[in-house]
Image (cartoon, rainbow, N blue to C red; front, side):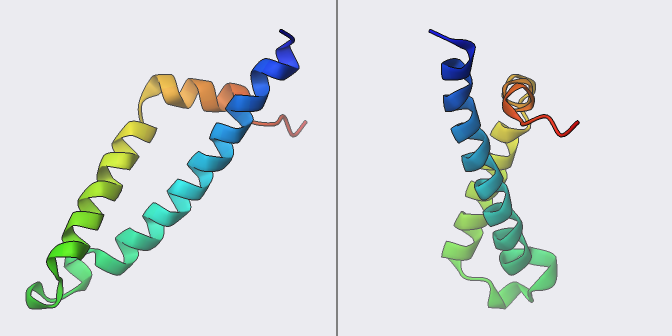
Length: 76
């Protein structure tokens, strides 16, 4: 296997992570408990917010970050 071939899955992972991060930001903005009155937030919104926060915890893992940084294109 070549180094280029090894980097391809990581590049695809990077694209998925960026998309997930954007989605998480939008979900947090829409369902953030401080932005809604307590009675306005339904159960599904709270569950979605919990799921997004779990995803962010996974993305904040140092091993995942190192792999993504290695896959990120160099801009020099």
